[in-house]
Structure formats: structure tokens, C-alpha cells
Length: 180
Image (cartoon, rainbow, N blue to C red):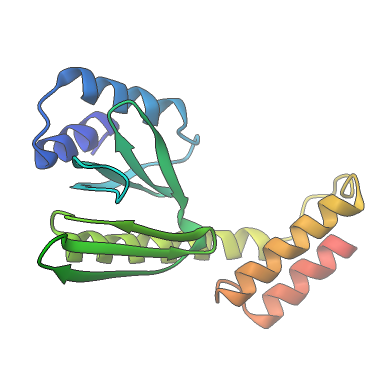
């Protein structure tokens, strides 16, 4: 699946046939794609702040909510700790994504259970990749420029450990590499 297929499928599910909206969403995603980021899945849903449905795009790195003319709402996958689905009479299937960056709620999500399973699996893979990158020997390079940079990196490690993305041994090794 490529980016165009992913966006087209999501807009079809959302019932939005506007080629301008599809082209704008595709441009938005492609402008911010990381070099090794690949599309995984998409569906339609509604952010609580919007009346009409938008598009939920799952990639190997993040979850994006795209809506006509609005800036995308990104959720980094390595920060995702849980994704649950509930059903309500008013809001249909509700996808709640809990991440270290905050909680994100999407309402009236099409095939929410399937999408949540894909989201959980992809988030697990992203955390494992992040853990491997942190546990790998760091290339010899300059030390952090300041104490603030070192503190930021240590806080990130602590958050990953708290979320269960790093074991105690991996956390200790990564911390020792930073402090050096």
C-alpha cells in the first residue's frame, strides 16, 4: 500500500469524495514523512472538536488525524501505551488512544476494533525499535551540548522505562551511555 492508496481508502470510508481534500491530505502527509516511515492502515473517524468525520492514518511511526484544512493531529507510536474501543449510542465506536503525550479520543470510528488492534501492534513494534536503538552502542560523538540536553534525554529514558518500553537493564545501559 502506498500513501495515495491509504488516503483514498480513508476518504472513501469517511464518505468524502472531494479530490481537493484528498490531495491536500496527501500533500500534508508526504510533507512530513520520515525517510523510513511507511503507511500501515487508515480509517475514518471524528475528533471530538470536529462535527464531520476526518481520516485516521496509521504509519510505522505515528498516528495522524487529518481533517479538511486543519493541521494534522500527530501521536508518536513509541509513546502509545494503550488503545481501547468503547461503544456509545451517541458517538458510535469510540477509540481512546493513551500515550505519554496525552490522551486522544476519536468518535464514530469505522471498524474501530480492527484499527485498534493494528494500532497496538504497530505501537509495540515502534517501542521495540526505539528500545533497540537506545540499547545499541552509541557511535562515538560529541557529548550533549548542555546540562539541559542531558536532562531532556534522561527524562525521555525515564518515560520509556515507566511505559514499559525499556527493561531495567536497558534503562541502566542507556543511562550510563548518556552520562558516560
